[in-house]
Length: 216
Image 1 (cartoon, one colour):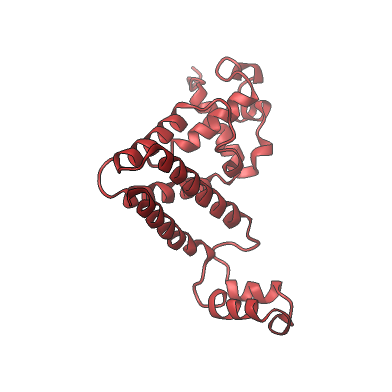
Image 2: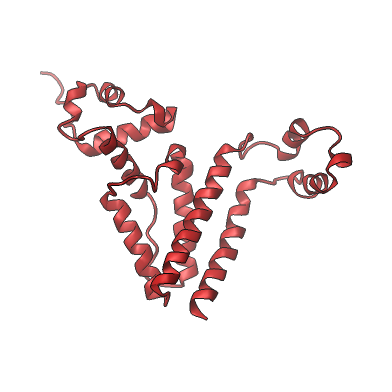
């Protein structure tokens, strides 16, 4: 007797597409490729996912489902810190998602639940609707922008930044660009420096400023 085949579901289709994108990039994701990974005919996917756009919608929603919702209790700054850290972690796991996360025209339930929780947490903390909009835009722009720069750096987190800078930058840096040379020597070349560690500092500044502006 042959082994029973795992039933095909939309969730399995989305998870497989996400795995392909994680490994090879978003351009590798096609209906045919996903079907091949699932060992089914491409036409079988259309019983669960209408088309490529619906596939992308489901992939984006799967990423949103990984992001921690802001806690309803406790300090607003703490809740938003954890939310931003979770958001960044999800984007670093799924680097293809940075450009897609807010681009879809058919938002899924995880996306809507996340946005609703963010808005509700701001409103319960005393933010006006207008200030909530400011906070939403500022925080998402910060997180997405930071991760976009982070994933496009020519060196990774485990690289010796000082040694990498020596290889990348011109030999006459100190003479031609003295301020940049000072920055490299005093910051980048220090043992253990990592660009990613700047995330928390900038996030803290932004959150405190938003809360002060909202509640004054």
